[in-house]
Image (spheres, rainbow, N blue to C red):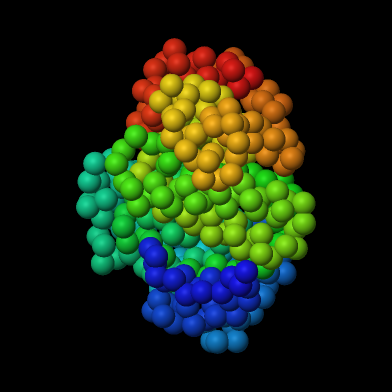
Length: 381
């Protein structure tokens, strides 16, 4: 199947192998003449990064590199990025990398022109209206993983260092002006990152599908996104240079981020505090807790999960779906428990308290309680 298309959903997307060659044109379309190139430390010296920067240089858009981005981006990373943006006289951001780099790059473009602290724009009620929208700089997003879908999102997750808490920062105008979605950029991902980011895409689609709110557009997108992940993530993991599988996963990741307007739930409510406290990979955390969340939510989601299983081609209804998730985790060498990645069981009360106030908790199909989340965490050990 060919994977080469131009989409405008929810923002202009240039999708297909080799589309990175259009990076300079994308910047011009976004109105960026002096971009700050934001990526993470691991990609700073990678060949794909060098090629992208060379394309900008050749077009007279030579970009300063900013790579002080942690796996779970923090307010300290943001402050450094804003300083670099202002010092270089930049007028926009090229956010290049996985979810961490995309999230931070979007926030640098957002906050470089603001006078209020970033926490004033947390995704609470209409706090985003506090921002000076005219001071938000344009963004071109280039994902190099297939997981978060941050390239098509209007929010970013940021860790408040002093409290070790993840918060969601939202503004509709931090949706990138142009996305370059080139699946060839994901071929060099380490297997563990292919696995973790792919499971993040599945978690987004699964939780959006299961969320009880009414949003039939997102509901349908989430369903097809799950099908794409189950069909293509094992291929992308086993055969890293399978461009077709990589393309389908890149599409599924974007679909998950579009779909979760409908809601997220306990998978994310638990993984957010775990990521903030242990700096663990977000998608891997989602994969570890996913089966136990499914079991907890079974009373509310058994029938819709059976319908999803039928669509995807999984026999056995809810039980068959759960078994397929377990089989997929095993095939991807996902750690089987929280203890396997060094989480201290003594932190359960603290994690549970943080999960209950996480903004994603309200979208869970079964109302979350202290007792329920504590039992869930105990099961994940």
